Length: 231
Image (cartoon, rainbow, N blue to C red; front, side, top):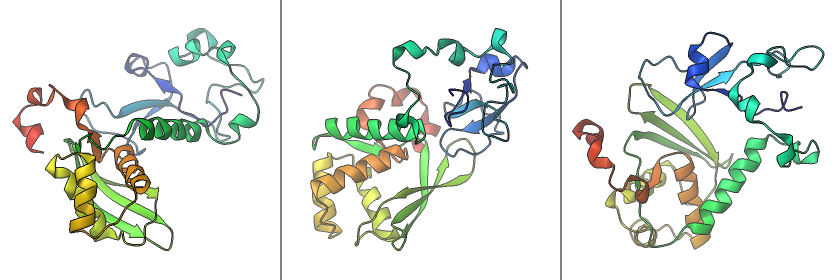
């Protein structure tokens, strides 16, 4: 069952370089194939390929692992005794529950005095609000020449069109507290967001890596060099 669930079976860089496994390189942000030669990219991951039925490519017809003696570290570390259950808990992909859990933890610790800033290695190229579908599409580009990519989220607010999204995101360039950004959104953009709506918006933009908690960069930005800081 583990080998059939729709979660990522990842290789370490050493396992990928060993030449023993069939895998694909993808970008964790875009979920597209990655052919960039940029060394040390933190968003590049190596995924074990899957068969036509969606199962791990090394799962045999007898439901046994065909590479058990040289199975991946992620497989070696798996232990069902920690609470593994094959039941209704996995009717949806595990990543759905994982994202929900991350969102809940994020919202619990979000405070009005926190400062969120634009991600220094990501540029927002465009925003499209599809009000009839209740979705918003972001066109983003990472530093390093990977090119623009699209990412979409479910979101609807009657006064948030593409222009308003851009203007709202620009407010975070001021490096002010969340409370101040929300106040300026109300006064300057006439966006009367409730505290809950604003918190959900900050979560959505953080999940897309458009915003990042400034505390994550404390003491580290000076080491990136002027080219990365100016990006």
